[in-house]
Amino acid sequence: MTLNNNGFTLNDGAKLPFVGLGTIGINGDQGTFEILNALNIGYRLIDTSTNYDNEGIVGEAVRRSALPREEILISTKLPGSYHEYDKAFIFIQESLRRTGLRYFDKYLIHWPNPKDGKYVEAWKALVDAQKQGLIRTIGVSNFEPEHLDDIIEATGVTPATNQVERHPYFNNNRMVEENKKRGILTESWSPFGRGYLNDVLNNSTIKEIADKYDKTPAQIILNWNYQADVFSIPKSSNPVHQKDNFNSTNFELAPEDIETIDSLDKGEAGRVEGQDPNEYHEYV
Image (cartoon, helix red, strand yellow):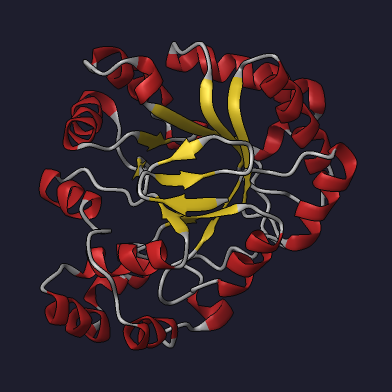
């Protein structure tokens, strides 16, 4: 993975922008317009999942957009109940039909579900789906080092990205470094925490740093990720917030401010819902 003026270049040669749009909670016809607004602002990657119940409107937004299909990157995920090879391969095809797309630009295994021990099967299905042109770039989500090594050893294919929980209360710098060792780009889900649990946007330290740079707290957090070579996918349906989030990489945080944000980490207690990938199982 490398970072340049145009965004991130992944280990398979694919390119990602500096920031994408998360869509959890963006639903229905109104959600279609919210996604279209983000595309009009300049977003070029939309992150969805079957579990978000919105793959259909994401596909609809792609069709309604004036942008060429090849300029819009769509990323989605394989749910935990489809880790068996045959189930995974068929599910990818079904997911494409739901969106009405011919291919996904990026596809992830959502959780490793290690107690089931089938994530290697799921990874093999993604590798073959990529070979058949159903997916352009393949990656994982919430994978720990041992999970990464298992799938790499079994297939010889290294994930391009690993989407993990990362925000100031759980900076997950350990996994950022583990991913870098393997040439994998770290993606940050819920970069602001989750408002109903631990809304870091209201943290007084973050607000002080935001005032120093005349930026919003959200822009400070996204820039903190950016300077750590981490790709952020903040969710927002608000046009003003979407624009602020998109314009979050045009300044530089001082090293001492990055250290201050890192110091807000609460370790395992900082996880938004206590979802330890070694224990948490997604059965949807």
